[in-house]
Amino acid sequence: MQRILSAHLADHEKQTVTIAGWIHRRRLLKSVAFLIVRDATGLSQVVVTDPAVRAEVEALTEETVIEVTGTITANPAAPAGVELTEPSIRVLGSVAVPLPFDLHRPELSATMATQLDHAAVALRHASRVEALRVAAAATAGFRAALERQRFVEIHTPKIVGTATESGANVFQLDYFGREAYLAQSPQFYKQLMVGVFERVYEVGPVFRAEPHDTARHLAQYTSLDAEMGFVTDHRDVMAMLTSVIAGMMATVRERTGAEVPDVPAEIPALHFTEALRIAGAPADEPDLAPAHERALGEWALREHGSDFVYVTGYPMAKRPFYTHPQPSDPRWSNSFDLLFRGLELVTGGQRLHRYEDYLAVAPQPDQLEGYLEGFRHGMPPHGGFAIGLERFVARLLKAGNVREVTAFPRDLHRVLP
Image 1 (cartoon, helix red, strand yellow):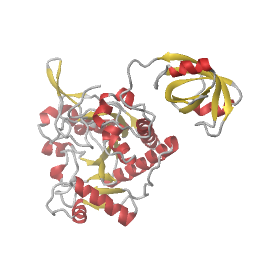
Image 2 (cartoon, rainbow, N blue to C red):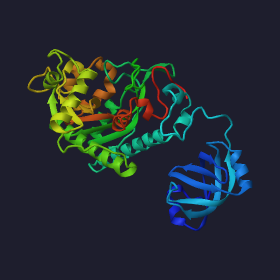
Image 3 (tube, helix red, strand yellow):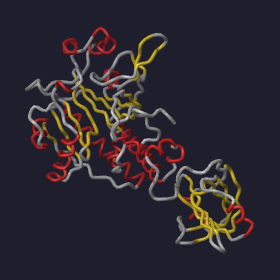
Image 4 (spheres, one colour):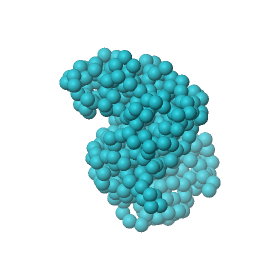
């Protein structure tokens, strides 16, 4: 279809052009009618004065898909600084039933449940479009930042024969009469691929059958994973992650214009024991609760002007078996979480890399034979991290619920649409 997108209309002033899109809004005045037409790049204004064309417009509803041919005329008050005059209109796709809610208003007034029930419509709203564009830009920034550091993109199985993350529930399925699971992460595979490329990353879905019904949890989400070999310890991984987050923020700013926070060259870091003290938690607390994370976020902003803070050295008892212990005190781990505005965004750390260490700690090593083989044949010291994309976008846009920034969320209650 030969058409001009709204973002390019100003380049065609006084020319006759064709646009196409959805009727975003109609304004029917006494002597003139206005159509606001939406396409992938923005809004165009169409001015209708001809009585016959006006009669056509009156019969149309919002979200009708139309093609409009008209003359581009300057008008600083119009969305693109120009508008289409003397238009002819052709309907390309009609609306079969009334809309479940208005899309032209700045805010979606429907409840979250209603929005999710009618996702095909809700996702057309400007706020939802912005969130999805930010997610796309963040993913592009993640890829670009790692490619610059000679990481290689990989693709790993999402149907696996054993659980990856100890302590997390799994979705079990029948795989041709055998027991299998949906992958909780690409952890095992990305570690093995360090033995191939040294530095690898993946963007893909992960599945967690955890019965959480909160604003921050999904049963399926997009994980941005990276793993790198020949590290000294977890601090090398943290330095890489800091540069990746900065690259993601820069790409989001460049591609979407969204307001993003500055990423410090060196993000403040606290050992887990110090984090407990600052958060006012008992010294024997095994993990950070959401309230503790919020307190640490407030501390980082107050003391360092940073929206980010690292918490390192989590107890080994709360970390997966492949986590490398802190050499000076094996009660603690060479692992970390990155908190963004008081919410855990990234988990990462140094992994075990010696075969004998895995034999000592791996649960049911006979079921992990394919994984352990990589370590039997020599693996370098390595580590990595995983970023939850939906959490990143929700926190960046200050959304109250990850479902607001997810196209078709899967949670405790929803597998449709």
